[in-house]
Each structure stands twice: as structure tokens, then as C-alpha cells.
Image (cartoon, rainbow over all chains, first blue to last red; front, top):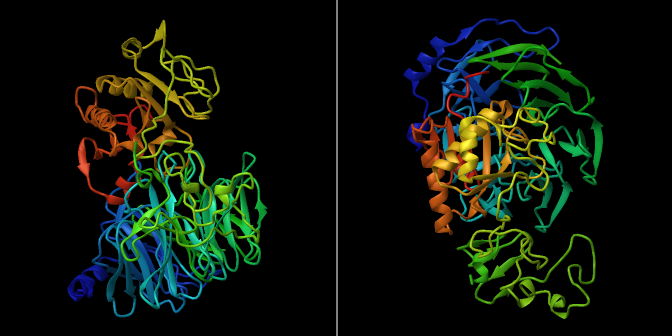
Length: 335
Length: 274
């Protein structure tokens, strides 16, 4: 596998030639390199994740417009320093399922999900390695960068396996068998580590008509239901945020690390999906029915609507928003 | 009667340790008991015990040593099965005889406004004396469609197609878990009233597909019918029998895994009439 992961120089040169920079300018309020990039062969971009320093974006590109339940794309690296450059990763495709690549704190190694499993990818050397094979979904990295959490969908029977994988010892150190009793479309397998890294918080499908948010404590293996019906979940800077149903009102809640007790932040909250972005300060919020987007600032609790229609979005570390529209990654200015 | 190990929804066998994983503890199939005593997050003397039931005080016992009648989904508490799971002999029973309503919802033909989706205020598609010919025919053939609690009725066009497919498959009854309700992929046809999720067929949960041959035959028949030109080929036809788009099979293990417990159908050409 390693040989096929190496950057093909001829291909990268070809990709470089195809990059079209419509706007090389930098948004005044957000001095990130936030130009617009056209991705060749793409009509849809998803799973967009920026490195902690904001110099590199990893995303998936699909040659088809988004439609229906099924979206699939192949991973692509874009360097934003100077003129954007595109580097296709010669890895298997991935399902559009609210899973974004996760970076280690140094911003060099990124872990990404494909239909073959989880790969690590060194953004400097372009070396890739399949570290967890299987039919997996959801992906989270612990704050200290030593552990990954993911769902293993491939186990037999009517359950999924929630696993915590230690990158230090290169093996699974904890797993829970979680029933799947939710007999309708299952979109999104969101999970995050708590800010102290001691627990995994996951939106589960183990109820017949609800999707509870549960806390899985790594040391003891204990499980606690945090909220009975959760539609979205993401890590903010310091705290965790989720969208839950509060007596019929969709509400954005905050979970502080010391007690993990839900505290209301915004109600009603018009978005049902959350994705961490950049340094975790900003959370991209999406309404899956209307496809409207907003950016939530976990430091100020401000919510900013993205006025134009995005198909997906990412916020760079200094607050510049990049919006996926068709096969383009377009700067939308700063927060 | 199935063995207990086939009846538990909450465990997976680990070949490294030869133990079964539950939410909270490991179970040894060899020993027939848990490997560690029961515990609770909050301190308690015997947190998951019922003091009137001496068997529950045995912290190592699996389902109070009565695996034929109980399940343990979490590793903590034995409980009677509340809903059938694969490997169990129990099946969900739906009352016989003609039905026009479900306990909390409404089926096409008897819509009384309880739903909130596009079909909620639509004319009944298959009500006696007030229906399109295809739906009247479907009703006469006896297919019975029910809905889970709170699920809005299908739009008339979707109902006509889905009922036609179910009839072509020879299905007696089906229960729908999602129409326009729920969270789906952003571009899902559910939001436009063009898709349904069916999770019970002929009174049996679709998740029994691998263990119940009659259910398997019925589900196969539905997905075959939805791939049959004479019925109209579903744009999306995802279920335990496979993933099909416009009748062509696609391969995606994760998406397949997510459709082992229901059949997702969209109408043919869902772009029409938008």
C-alpha cells in the first residue's frame, strides 16, 4: 500500500496545472489564505477539514452532484499557503456521512476514513498507512492526539462496536457493543472525545425511535445517557456541544468537561448537524432539510448565518470561512 | 427455542480473549457468567439488584441464570425482551383483519390530519370511494400499511408506488418508520416526500432478514419488485437484499450495514413534479 500512497509527481504537476484561483485575496477580517479553489473533476465537496494551522485542507471530492441518500468521494489534499495546490490521495473512497478527517495537534498527521478503514496520512511526506481496517464510521481524535474513536459497523448481528484505538500501542484499548434498534435511515455517526480525553461522547442508534447521546467512560467502560434525543454533536474549544430535543424544541446545549451536565445555549436552534472546524473554536452548523449553514463560535457563543448557500463549509483557524459550492471551495470572509 | 447466546442484542465475541463484550462487562461463554462483578457509576451496595429477588444479588450471574427468558443488553440488568431481535423466535404481532389506522398514525386512505408532512393534508390516496385506481386496487388486494408513532403519511404519489410494489411482492402488511420525518442526508428524498423506510414486513422486523427465511423471501420480493420495470424501478432501493440505484447494484459496505434493518425506497424519477 505504501508505494501507491507516494505522491506521483507527474500527477501532482497535472493537478497543479488544473488549479484555478479565482480570488487570491485575503479577507481583511480574516488573514487566512482564503482564496477560491476550483477542484478539477468535482461537482461536490464534503468532509472538509482544516489543519490546526490552517495551511492545509483535506476533503473528499465527488464527480456527481449530491442527491439522495448516497454520496461518495475520494480524498484530496489542498495546500493553502501561497497558490493553492491540489494533491489527490490515492486512497479508497468514503461515504458522505458527517465524518471529517481529524488532525493531530502538530497539524502534520491527519487521520481519515475510507471504505477500507482509517488511514493515517503525513501531509509533509504524503506517506499513507492503513491503521484500522474495516467497515467503519465516525472518527474522533483525543485532545492529546494519542487515541482515536470510531464506530465499527462490520461486526455481525444487530449492533455496532464503538472502539477506542491507542496510537501509542497500536491496538484497540476499549470497545463497547452498542445495539442498533433505530430502524430507519441512519445518517451521521458523530462522536467526540470529552475535553479531558477520559470519555467518548457518541450519538447512538440504540433506541427504536430516538438517537440518544451517551457518554462512554474509557477507564471504567461505564455508560451514561446524557440526553435522550440528539441530532448533532461536535467538540468546541474546551467544551462539547450537541443539538438535542428539549420538549419538542431543538436546542443547542453545552457540556462542560467537569460535569458533562447539559446547559442550554441557543433555543430554538435551527440546525441539526454540527462539525468541528479548525482549532475547534468554530463549529459549522447545518440544517439538513434546508441545507442552510451557520458558524457557531464556541468562545463567544455567537451564531453567524452564512448568507450564501453552501453545500459544506470549513472555518480556518483565524476565522475565515471556506464554503463548498459545486466543485469550488470559495472564501466567505471572516467571523 | 434458540440458545441464549443467539438472543442477545448487546454482545460481540472477541476471539483474542474468547469473551463476549457487553456494554459494561465481559461475559464468558465457557463459564456462563460475567468475568467481573456488576458495578455502577455511582457508589451503591448492589446497584443493579432487586432485593426481593435473590438471584439478582449474584453479581456474576448472567440474566439471573435464566438465559431462556431474559436478555442483558448492557451487562447490568436482566430484562425481558421488549422487542424482538435477530435469533429470537418472537415476532412482532400486528392484529389481523382490515386496518385503516395505526395506534398513533394514519395510513393512506384514512388520513385524519395527525401527520405534519406533505401528505398530512393531502387527499387520501386509497380511501374507499376516493382513491386513485391503483391504490383502490391495492387496498382490495389486502396489503395493509401501518406507520410508527408520529410518522406522517406518505404523499399520494409515493403511496401509490410503494403500495403497488408491496402488492406486486405479495406482501400482506408493512410498517413504515420514516417518510418525511427524521434526520437524513441533506439531499435525501425523504425531505421531499419521495422516500419511505419500511422496517416491518408481514409482522416481522426486517432486521430478522438473515434468520427468518419467510421474511427474507418477502424482503427479497419487495426489493425485486422495486427493481422491476413493470412496477417502475425505484430510484433508490436499499435494504438487506442489496443496494440498488435505478435498478443497478452498488457496493458500499457502510451504507449496506445501515440498511440491514429497513428497506429504503424512493419513487422512480423522484425529480418529477418537483
